Amino acid sequence: MEERPPDIGIPLAWVGAEELPVHLVNQFLCQFNQDEFFLTVGQIVPPALIAPTPEERLEEAEQIPYVPIKPLARMAFTRQRLMELVATLQANIAQYDEFQHRQNPMNEGPIDEGR
Image (tube, rainbow, N blue to C red; front, side, top):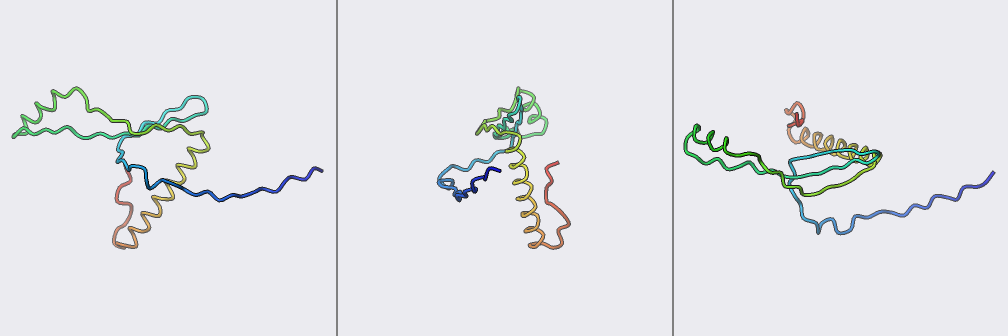
């Protein structure tokens, strides 16, 4: 039987992440094609409706054909890497919820489940 060479582990380190800009994203688009998933993240800013009366603000809103989404990043993942991302996000949400519960024990659950 052929011996398998030992696995060699080299640590990974995030270098330069603190130098990247931080963007607020509030819009997500996920698509797939064959074995790849494409995640586009972007941002919308609600239009300013500044008319003095509710009726006039409604008229302003009716004149807006659409609210543009500014794309900020587009990433591609294999299914396996996308599942790792989902697991990482879920673990982080669980840690956040536990932290919030310790800060305010009267809180009976997540602040916002995004639904």
